[in-house]
Image (cartoon, rainbow, N blue to C red):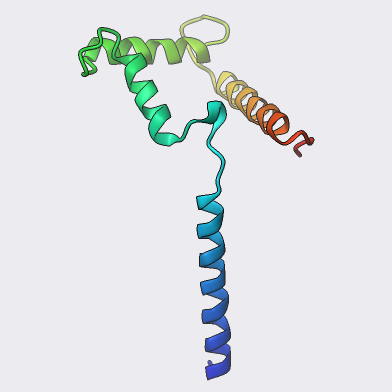
Length: 108
């Protein structure tokens, strides 16, 4: 690679890196206006049902059972691939609606 090509490639990589830093710095918080750390703390508090600052095996199992029940759409005690796909699609639609609400524009 010639010097000019190396210089051009370095400049392009540096420009992309700086642009991505600006994007991250201006990134909007997720749904509810909270960042990852705040949502993680809320998730922990929700699982810590007795409020002792620790999640017991029973608390973890209860939260897991709740998530499983939400996936098991027909309530037969099993989660099928179709139920998982339906849940994923429902979440995708929820995110899309939220983005449209926040931007006041249709989202593809």
